[in-house]
Length: 58
Image 1 (cartoon, rainbow, N blue to C red):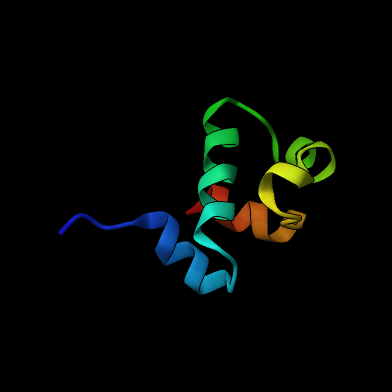
Image 2 (image 1 turned 60 degrees about the vertical axis):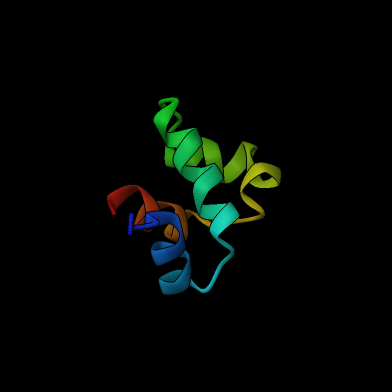
């Protein structure tokens, strides 16, 4: 069974897996944490900078 990292991280942060998956997509496109936190809140469902850093570091 493949590991769903978005689901795993989402459960640790108490957020929806879709939020994590969208944040990962933004980071894969070379967006920075400050940029995503400020200008892409609607995409990530309002994840804050601390949550975004945790996702990026995982």
